[in-house]
Length: 357
Image (tube, one colour):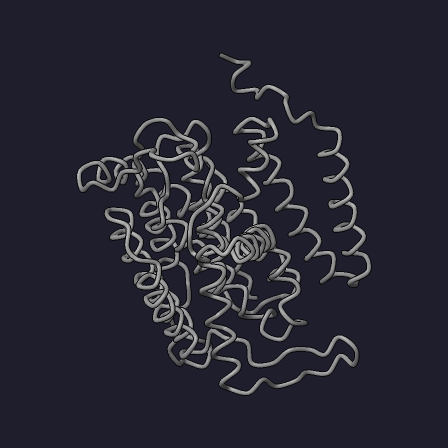
């Protein structure tokens, strides 16, 4: 990390924040103009009136402008930074797919195929894990190319959809993604990453989310839609398998940093398999739905999930700084506190939103 990296981080965050904030009202107007509007038509949706869906375009715009301004498109060796180019091309594909899907929903299989193509581009250009560290011996184990490519594509596509699946409440996906981006940035700084590009991307992603949140926090003026949620998941996944993460123990730290969307998605898959439902079929069984059903208000639910996401991210950082046992103490504490809180919670408690009316 050179002496200008700190300034690059600050400026990339600020530029992305300002650009996303300024672009969001324009994205809202564009959404209504081209018909990218979410009309509530089932009990999974928490809003009661049509909402614009292309807020994700503002997030992407803020991120893109910042990265183009501050990221290194050439490495110190003078060669082209193909990793960055691959991520940007893949992001454009994911965002384009998201826009069309927000205008008119596409079939799940079609979206999955396009996401795989988008993930393959950065992976084939070097954005993948090449080795993992044996937790018992500490030695690096090289991964065969086929497994490296397949595993990295699976990771990117999985996280892309995981973030999309938690986008069910105002401000939830943007807030959780910004927490994850800040956590990844913190780990890169702790590990003294020499890649200015990774630092800039993490800071820009967090800044773009913060710029969008004033419009998206409850009560939301518009949504990010699949355009924003899949883009956030895609970039977070790409960042989390580069730099120090390439050789870390079996994705442990990225798994914790992105723990909330990943675990919620895994539980959703298991739940749908047990009910013999299609894996991609939407339902009302996600964690945020459960909290709402137990009487928490919309805002309280989002804040609780922010806290859970932050604690998981901090666990990952603690694991990096110390050892697994210390991180497990925090994780177990979170689980026990959650179980205790749910036990005391009166299921029939009136939501705060209704009390305010």
